[in-house]
Each structure stands twice: as structure tokens, then as C-alpha cells.
Image 1 (cartoon, rainbow, N blue to C red):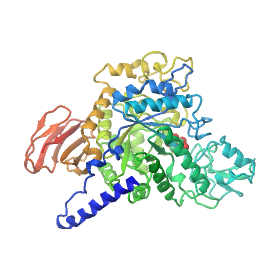
Image 2 (image 1 turned 135 degrees about the vertical axis):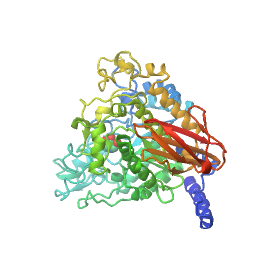
Image 3 (image 1 turned 90 degrees about the horizontal axis):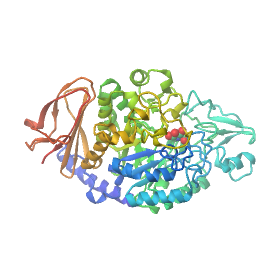
Image 4 (image 1 turned 90 degrees about the vertical axis):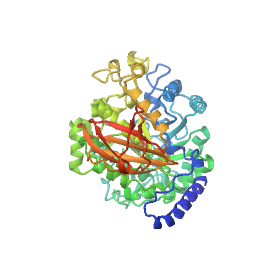
Length: 579
Ligand code: NOJ
């Protein structure tokens, strides 16, 4: 409700503004009023994504746990993190790394007890950290008691919680999410004597979200965790959660029921005014408005998968034209909404929206070997080994922290962890956190860890890819990312302000100007390995020099607010525009 009110206020400001626009065409959108800052905290948050299972093992059984992550909260504070997103931590057969849940209300006993979770939340509250969690209600594990009951008896109340077909549906092998690994989306269940629908693996039967009883259950789940103290949900697989699936539907052209999200949004806000939904939805920009909601009544934030693919294209080729277009294409979102931006997440980099030739260029540079590619569309590597060059990695992170949206970093990326391509599918990028050069990277004292620790090659924990070594080295990636996180905090206009792309005179250089509450910032990134001579039109008329926020030096501006700069390969600048 509160958000609806804020959205209405902002819409009102904007519509008043529109009248002025007819007089002076160039008026930018009205910025968010400053007293909304607390409610819209996600506009400028820095989110850290972590899987408890592989973060820190406190009791030496080889599996990370809640006590372990609780011990490491000061590390996250030092990094500048104030919001954590936890991967699924509920009881699970663990066939899809926890995304196959067998009890939505519990804690996986390998990760700790209810009390350990509560203590973790208490400590995060004390330190001013918000905790978000995955909400995986598109499907359950086939070991969930609901599915067991549903497949056993036709007259079970749980039967209609899943999606069934008596005959094999015509489109039984269309719309798989894991092509190459998954053979079908409808599988025959002997016990039920019918086919069940599953967008993902066959051990993850889809829940029938059209069923009001299940919608009530989802609200109950959400309420349970809000009461436990979480600050919001990363909603898994949103398009599939809201698709209207039945025996006759076409999985390649589904219809969606968006009011499931609207109701969820409303429900959450009634219970916790500043709790949010962060949607996992890799959608075309023409559909993004439906996901955010026209007036921001659906997802407050969504991962910008679209821009992510073009960002990788730019990192691979040095060309920024398509990235600029992707940023423009994803610009129009409700005033209360925000993108979540990222370089790597826990899945493959999905390049499915690039053309074949664009994707081939990214493959050629970042994933040339077929063992590095996955699902005919992506790359299953961590960022550091993929980009290789430290200057390119620094450029990528500077861009992440300064692009429109709230930056999200996955555990281990901040120290440049590597991947283990011997592990299957996406497990390659899910190895334990590397804390020090002690055995098992200080992750665990057990003889055997839940996933193997990277102990060979240049990304081994013994080769400086660990927190302790990098904290002691001011030039390390860890310290560089800590500095970027601090810099981002000094530049609230990125999250709050209006932005526009500036002319740079170079196809390889991308410049963005932000304006908010009388503050302005210009960020410039050279995606080429070669030096670029640029002429940047800052559109500033004050006649005062720009301040380079990295080193406090000043750059005078010429007539019309233009300035010339020679940018060495893969370098970047953050300039404060002085009033
Ligand atoms: C999306 C998650 O990001 C992915 O890791 C998981 O396998 C699928 N959803 C199924 O839950």
C-alpha cells in the first residue's frame, strides 16, 4: 500500500512535469523525493549472493552452515555489503543444489537448526544487514510430501497442486530450460498413471499456481519467513511461476497471470513495509513493464539479464553500441522500481538473446572450449578466469558499480575465484569460499568437503586467491571491489537519479551522466584494450572543473561543458560535476 502511495505521488509529480515538457521539451523526469529513501532502500543497495552450504563450515563436517556465515558477517560489513541474498537453505534432496525443496518451512539439517537461523538473523539485524532469500515456489522436489501424496491418490487434495495430463501432451518435448540435459517437460509417473509437467528437471514437478489453495500456501510460506525476519525474496523462475500451464498449453507461447505477483507484492507489504520482491525473469524489454507492473505494483526489482548479455558482448569485443542500446531499452521502468545488475550469478551466463554471430564472439573470447559452454546458450565459468586480464576485470566491476541499477556480487567473485570444469553443469562455479591458505582454503577442517575446494592451478587458494592474502594486499581485487563499493555509496545519484548517455566520440567508450538533487556524476568506461581519444560532452555549463573521484584531480571543462581525455585501454573514470 505504502509503495502504491509513493508510486501515485511520483506519478502525480511526473504528470505535472509533463505539462511543462510541452513548453520546454528537454525536461528530465522528476527525481525521487528524498524522504522516500528509507522505503526504497533497494535503489542503492549492494547485494551479496551466497550459498550457506559452501560459505563457511563451523563444525568441521565439510558443509557450510548458518553458524559459519554468522561468524563471517564482519567480513561482509568490511566489503560494504548491507544486504545478503541466501540461496535455498530448506530441506532438500539437493539434486539441483537446493532448488528442489522438500519442506518450505524448514532448515536443511546439514546447514544448522532453526535456532542457528534465528541467531543469524539476530546478528544481521544488529549489524544493519538485510537478509533476502530465494522463494522457489514454481516447483517442489519430487520428494516433497505434497507430490508424494499427489502421485499416490487421484482424490488427494494435493493432486490439483501439480499439473497433470492423462495423455502425453503434444508439446511434451518443447520449452525445456536445460536443453541438452533435460529431455522433456512432461514425464510419465507410473504411480500416478499420468504425465506431470516440469519446466526444469524431472525431479522438480511444477506447482499449479492457478490453484487458489496453493496461492494461499505461498502467502503462508512468505509470511513464515517474513516473521522470521527476512527483508525480501528473490523470486525464482518468475515467468514459469505465473505461466498458465495445462495439458493443452504451448510451453513456447505461454499466457501469464501477473496478478499472482501483484497479490504477493501487496501481501508482503502489508506484513513488512520495506520488504521487496526481486524477480528472476530473463525477459525481453517489451515485456518488462508487465513484470515491474505499470505503476510498480509487481516486482520492485528484477535482474537485468538483457543488459547482462550485451555487457558480456562489450567485454568480449570492445564495442559498446549494443550495450548502449540495451541500457536504453531497459531504461523505462516505474519510478519506484530498480534493476539488479550483475556480472556473474550462480547459473551459466545466459547469452540466449544475442544473435548466433554475437554469441559466437563471446564464446570465442570467454568460453572457446565446449566444456565451458552449457545448455546451447551460455558459459559456465566464473568471471576472473573468463576475463583473465586484471585490467578488464577492474573495468567490468567499475561498470557494474556505476551502471543503472543495484549491483549484485556472488560470493567468491570479489577475490576472483576460479571454476572447476570437472564438476557437472553449473556446479563448476559453486565451489567453497576461499578464506585463507590453510587446508581447504579455511572453509572447513573436514577431510572431505561438500564440493571440492579449488586447490590446483592459478586460481588455487594457495596462489593468493583467498580473503586473508588479498586483505593484506592493497592492490588486490578484494580491496579494489571494497573501494568501488565505497565509491558507489558516495554517489547516491546512481541509484536515485535520472541518467543519460553522453557522446564520447569513440565506439569503444561509454559515458553516463547521473543527476539527482543538485548532484551530478559522469562515469566513463573504455571497453577497448587500446587507448581511446575521447571528446566527452558533459552538458555542464557551470564552468567549474570536474573532480576525478579516484584521485581527486581536477579536469577543466571547455565551452559547452566538453572535455578531451585520452583513456588508456580498459580504464575508467568517475567524475563529480561541481556546482
Ligand atoms: C533458477 C535458478 O537460478 C536455478 O539455479 C535453478 O536450477 C532453477 N531456477 C530451478 O529452480
